Image 1 (cartoon, helix red, strand yellow):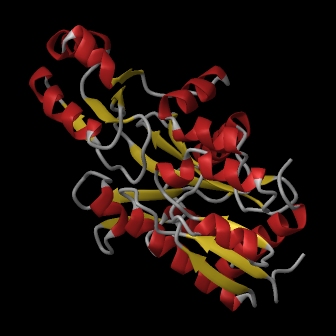
Image 2 (cartoon, helix red, strand yellow):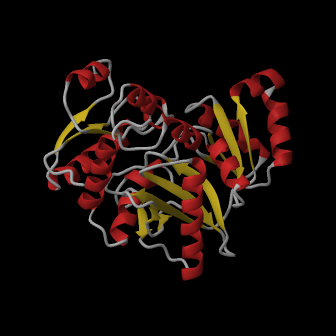
Image 3 (cartoon, helix red, strand yellow):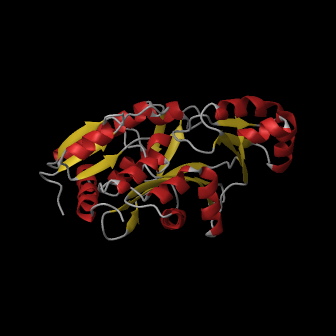
Amino acid sequence: MTIEGRHVVILSGGISHERDVSLRSGRRVADALLRAGAHVTIREPDETLLPWLAEHEYDVVWPLLHGASGENGALYSLLRASGIPYVGSRPTAAKLAWNKGTAKALVKRAGHSTPQSIALPNETFRELGATSVIKAIAQGIDYPAVVKPVEGGSAQGVSFVNTLSEFSRALVTAFTYGDSVLIEKQIAGTEVMVGVIDLGDGPVAMPAVEAVPKSGTFDYEARYNAGETIYYSPARLSPEVAERVAAIALDAYETIGLADIARIDFIVDEEGEPWFIEADPIPGMTETSLVPLGIEAAGLELSDVYAQLAAKAADRGARN
C-alpha cells in the first residue's frame, strides 16, 4: 500500500465561511503527499468539477472542504454515486457528525457525558416569538451558556452568554451562519481535541492536544492565527484521564460511524470528567490545526500518515 506515483486530487476552497481554512488545509496536505512521492492536483469545487472528474484519470480524491459544502455528506454522496474513491466517511456518518445536536445525542446514548443543550430552528423564534422562546431557554439551560450554529465549524458564530439580556445578540450571531442554533451549558475546564485515524488496521486515537488561547476563547482567530494559542501536545492530562479521553474519542468515532480521519472535541472539567462537544468529519489540516499536532505527538510523520490514508482509500475503491 503506497501512494508513490499515484494521482491524488485534493478538493479545497469552496464558498463557505471556512474557505480560507480549506485552502490552507489543502495546500498542507498536498505538500505532504508530494513529499511522499504522489502526483497531486488541487481543485476548487465549482461547476466544472464533476465534468473534470469524469474526464480525467486519478487514483483517489481527498475532500478537504470545510463547512457545509464538504462536511454535510452531500459531496461524499456525489462521489459515491459516481463511483469515485475518496478519503473520508460515508455520507450518512458525515451528516450525523455535521449536526452537533445529532452527534451529541448519539454519543450521550452511548453512555458518555455531553453538556445539557437544546437545538432550535429559526422558525421556532418566528412562530412563538423570540422573547418568549429566549425566556423558556433561560429557564431550561444553566448559565453560563454557549450559543452556536447547529451546523458549522471553526467556532464561527459562537457566543458565550451570562445573562438573559445577552441571548438576543448571541442568537443573531449564530443565525448568521445557519438556520438552527444549539444552546449549550458551558463547561469550565480544559479544551482538548483527539484525532482518530484508521490506516487499515482499525481506528487509533492520537494523543490529545490541549488548546490554551491567549484571549481565553478558542474562537476562529485563536484557531488559525499563529501565536494566538498555546498548544500542549500531548495535553497536560493525567495518564488515567488521557486514557479515558482516548477511549471515549474512539467510541464516539465508531458510534457516529466515521471513517479514515476525524477529530473529536472535549472539555475536561476540574474533576477530570471528559465532556463530548462535537465531532468533525473533515478536520482542519493547517499549520495550527489539532489533528496534525496529535499525529506528530504520536511520533508519526505527517507525509507517511497522509500517504497511507490516500493509498488505503485508493485501494478500497468506491464506497458501496
